[in-house]
Length: 345
Image (cartoon, rainbow, N blue to C red; front, side):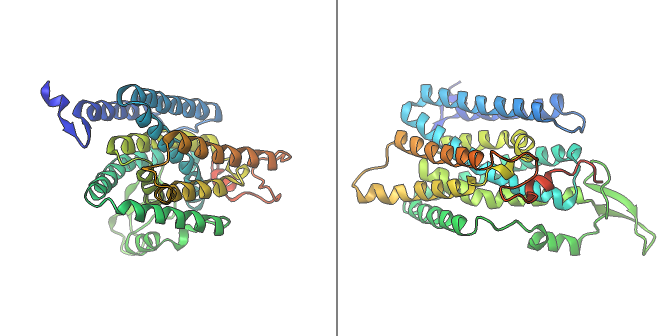
């Protein structure tokens, strides 16, 4: 029993084991009970699952508040809100990937679930490495802060640029080096089929596997922004990891709920840009004012205020839309068009 109370990266071992067990149970429930068969996930189911994961993430914040104190609770909630908001921006990229590879909705779930499994492992490695670096070299936080400010400004400038899957160097490499089937083979990632040139049975990868790789790669790029953002909020590895994973666990359900509506959030990227600039800038502002750090309550309130203003402003700006899939300028939305691949094989 004493082993469970030993220190593991700043928190008792039982807290880490308890959280990882909860994550495994949620993934098993998702894979083994709710979605054993491929099917088109409807809006109502998506909204219910999204509400469940968000409620669970907030409830875990209550546990953090009770177990580690109000300041840790505020830091967790701020991290959770920021990560969840950045995940919404990632939904657009995922929709573009599915649209490019013409992945039907009944197979999108399989890609996202395997993608989340990879994300949990990847985030764990990146956060552990980041925590070790920050603990050894505290000045790295200033690099994270400067990077966030730079990224936020860059997002403001390039907010209308579309994601081009075909230009991705990893996609180009895999397309040239591997045999790729021209069509999907159900839910399979790899198949054995006869090469029309050699007439020999060989191993081929399917567009579904390419889509999975692109989704994982998109999360790596997404993590480059999100992990420095959470480290700028708190350097506690437990708070960083738990807020990250809870935000990601509900990404699949959030995707199916919002992919067809993401075109309405026309000001969301601007709001996210300002959040990144604020989170990075507050470290320099705190130093300039002679403060140890900006109070967590202020950080949470300002972050929520920016995001709520961006979302409400977006919905108000697009309130006169009558057709799904139309952007605020009346043209077909790339994200909405990409998400609608239910009839393509």
